[in-house]
Length: 173
Image (cartoon, rainbow, N blue to C red; front, side, top):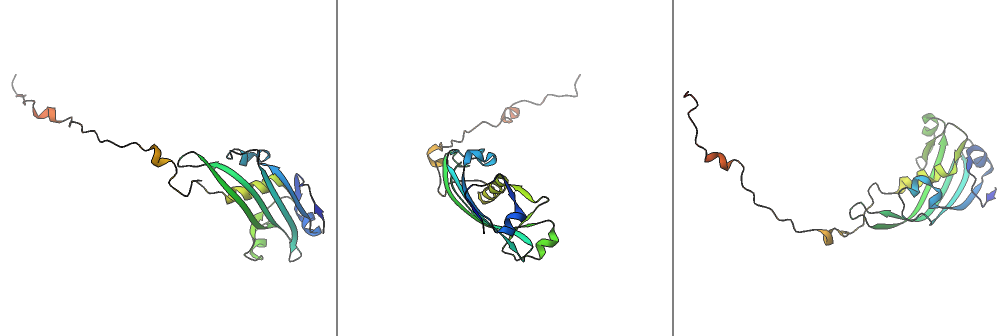
């Protein structure tokens, strides 16, 4: 069993699983492009722990934990929304759906074409899957502060003027 502190840029899926490699390290949110687009706190850290192994002596798998504090924009009040994420996942890497059918339901299936996968892509995908679709506070936010009293304006019916017009004899020339 190998243990490495630094996360490589590419994960050699089958090779790492065969050797039962464990990797752990940290990233800045700013180094994860798709996450930094939505996060307000780009300088905070993302902790990653990955353990590779073979299931049934043939299917490469990874058990992982990703932990971070992320600040998103609340979709109701547009204020900062802090979330602590601890993403636990257990992935099985397969080449096709048939291979996936042989596996236990405890695995999330990850269909791959190559034996290598970009580390940042794997981490980013797992974080994005754990985020809410429309992040919002668990309470009524600041919407109550900003609500203005809605006053219904009583408007005159535009057709009332027509009732005062006398119908002219159209047939006379």
